[in-house]
Image 1 (cartoon, rainbow, N blue to C red):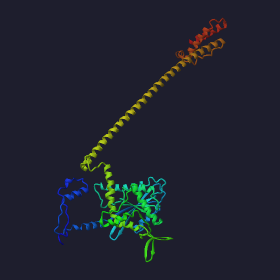
Image 2: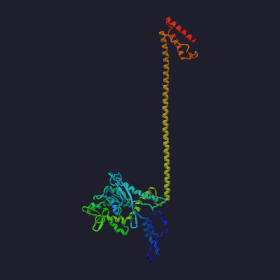
Image 3: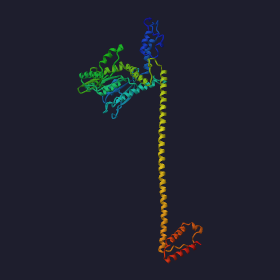
Image 4: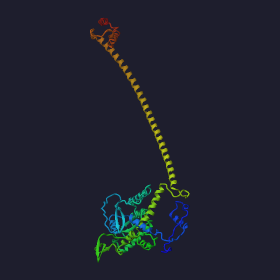
Length: 491
C-alpha cells in the first residue's frame, strides 16, 4: 500500500495551556486548526481500526433507548409501540380513576442479530381524563427532570460507574394527536410547550384511518402552523450528515406522521401483512399509500435513533445540568469574563456559606435573647399582678378581722347586758336563785377563777343597785337572807 493511500492528518498542539481549560469545544476546534500541521504517514499504523473497535465495544456493552408516549386514553399508544418493534409487550391494564396523571415505565431486553437493546417504554396513564386539565403535564415534566437529576447525581459522585449505569433519560417523546381534523387542543399545545426544551418531541396523528386523505393533509398543515405560531419546537431530523441529509429533509416535510397501528395479521394474496380490516376494506399498516407508519419506523429506529440519544445528552441534559450547576453557584467565568476554576468557585461558595451561617446564628441568638426578655417581662408582670392581688386580699382580710372583732365585742357586751337584765328581772319577780351545792364545787381558789362565780357576784351587785329604793320589807329581808347564805358559801 502506497504511503499516499494511508495518509492521515495529525493535529499538533504545541501549547494547549494558552487557550485555558475553560474554552468551549468550538473554540478549541478553531484554535486547533490554527495550531496544527498536516503530516503524511510513511506506512500503515493501525488507528484506522478505531471505528471497528468502537463498534465492537458498543455491541458488547449494548444500547439503551427510552420512549415516552403521551396521548389520551384509548388513542392507541400501546398498539403502535407493539407494531413498531414487531413484538407484543406485556402491558397490564391500568385503572383510569386516579385524580392525577401517572407514568408507568417498563423495561425490556430486545435483541436483533447480535445487537442488544434495553428498551424502556414510559406510558402516561389517565392523560386527558381529568376535568381540570391545567396541570396534566406537570407529572410528565417532573418525571423527565427526575431522570436528569438521577444521571447528574451519578456524574457528581466521586466514584462514578456510568459504564454500568442504566440510563433512564427519555430519548424521544411520541406525542399522539387525536384525529379531529380541525386543530390542536389547548392541552396538546400546553404540554408540548412545556416539554420541548426537555425532550425530543415527534408528533404523530393517531388512528389516521378515521379521516380522509384530503382532510389529513389539511390537518397536517394546520398542526404545523399552530406549533410554529405558539413557539413549540419539535424534533427535526438532522441534515448535517450527507449520507442521510436528503432523506431526513424529505421526512421533515411529512411531519407530523399519520400512523395506524395493528398487531393483527391478514393474508392478502400471497403475503401476510399487518393490517386492520373494516367493512369497507383493509388498511395495511406498512403500506405507505395508507399511512406513514413505515416513515416513522425508518426515521425513529433505522436512521436517527443514535441522533436522538445524542441530542438528549448534548442538548436537553446539558441544559438541565447547566441550570442546576448555576443554581448551585458554579460558573465558567467570573464577573469580568475571566475563567474561574472549580477550587475558586468552591472557596467562594464556602465563604458565602460560612457568612450565611454566621448571619443565621446571629439572627437566632438575637431572636433567643429577644424571646427571653419578652418572657422575663411577662413573668415580672405576672409577679406584680400576683403581689397586688395578695396585698388586696390581705387588706380585705384585716378589714374582715376588725369587723369580726368589733361584732364579737358587741356580742359580749350584749350578753353581759342581757344577763344583768335577766338577773334583775328574776329578783323583781321574787324567784329564788337556784341552790348551789357545796359538796361538788371546786376549791375556793379555783372557784374564784370561775366566770360563773364572778357572774353571781355581778348579779348581786345589780340586785343591790336596783332595790335600794324599794320600801318592801319582804324584799329587804330576802336580800338579807341571800347575803347571809352568800357569806356562808364564801366561808
